[in-house]
Length: 173
Image (tube, rainbow, N blue to C red):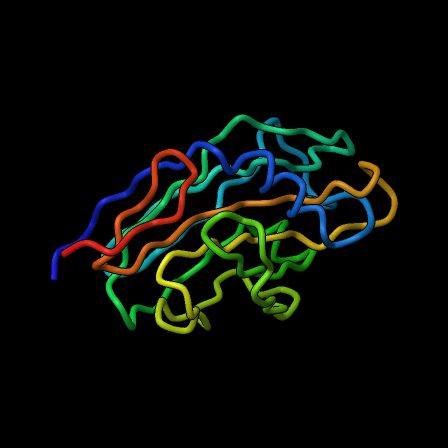
């Protein structure tokens, strides 16, 4: 069924920035040098979305960004593919699963070091119909005072309405 809308949610930037630093330590993007932070690629149900970070350690300098995490409408039982940049894969990363308000950590999946694409999450794996995945780069204790890269992205399973004001999604129909 053709649900392929991508929406943005406003009131999640602060929470995403606070929650994303959960991997204690310092720098992200340890090898490699670039003028911009890498994006996260999310693929599910024919959709291909690029996600900007809300924070990133760029060449030893902690950066916070004003990007708004997208909210992607997905069909039930859809594989969610997450692809990180080579430097992030090399550094290591995990996926944190949060409720629809980025308040409650539901779970965390460690991704094997060196893995660039992870497809081990299904849209029906998470109990609430609306949830966030936050990709968090492993940190290196040397730089950025504990700041690690973070890419939050929201999901709403078909049959739910995504909030635009930070409120809880409500069922449609």
